[in-house]
Each structure stands twice: as C-alpha cells, then as structure tokens.
Amino acid sequence: MSARDDGSHRSLIIASVVAVLALAVGSAAFIALLVNRQGNPGNGAYGAVSCSAPHLSGSTVEVTVADRGDSMMGQHPMMATMRTTPSTVAAGRVSFVVSNVGALVHEMVVLPLPADGPGTRPTGTDGKIDESQSLGEASRSCSGGTGNGIAPGGIGWTTMVLKPGRYELACDEPWHYAAGMFDVLTVT
Image (cartoon, rainbow, N blue to C red; front, side, top):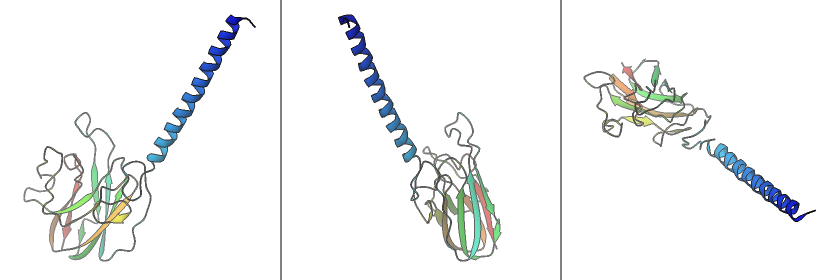
C-alpha cells in the first residue's frame, strides 16, 4: 500500500468514526425527545396522558376543551372551544370533569357570569383574565383542583357548591379565553 493510499484509508476511517458518533448522538437526542414528550401525568405539558376521574359527588358536569393547536399570537386563529354538558344543573354540590381533547394545555375556571355576557371579560397584556372572583378550578392533570394545566389527552376535576345563578366557565391559559374558550352553566 502506498503512502497516498494509506492517507486515504485513514481519512475514510476517521470519516466513518465521525459518522457513527454523529448517528449515535442524534439517536440519543431523538430518544430523549420522545421520552420527554410522554408528559408527566401530574401536570405534563407535552404528550398525551390518560386517566379517569374517581366517583365524584353531586351533579356531574362534563366539560370538553379543545383546540386546533394553531398559533396563539395572531398568525392564525386558535379555533378553541369549551363545551359543557349538561348546561343546566340543580343548585348544590356540582362536580366538573374536564377532558382535554386538544393539542395544548388547558384549564377550567368557574366565575360568576359577567353582566355583559359570556366572553366579555377583558384580557390583560399577558393574555389572561382576572380570576379574583373564581369559585374554583380544574387545572391539574389526572387529579382534582388547582395545578399547572390539564395536559393533552388528560382530565382534571373539581367539586364545589353552587347557588342558583349563571356561571361562566373559562380557560385562563394565556390567550385561550380571547380565542373563545368559555361556556355558560346555569344553576337552578
């Protein structure tokens, strides 16, 4: 083998080693991304989680939150929805089971209906509404009460005592309310 062939052979070996290392690093990074996107059943923001609510007391209201997962900041409308079934319940203990069928993290906050009607609350520069009148919320994946949001595919729940009146259910993740994530519950 000539010196020239030996140099070419050495370059080929070095290039092969570099390619194998790059493939190994890339594969490890890809696997890490997949593992991290599985989401944390406690409150993961990535991936889908699956769970079911325990038996809850009082009237049960099913709330479905959904989105198309589009831009929240104005490039495209988000196409967000919140649907409540039933829309009327008797006064007293009411349990809410919130199912997130969208691609983004959501929550459900119960507020007295504003005098101007649903969807009229001002949105701050942070994209959120004033929750100071909140009567309770479901914002924890696979658990009841307050948390960091309900992950895609997950559910959250809460139980409260409601007096007769009309209530606005709202998602207060940034810009979600402004995108249409609210509904009305009538308590008789």
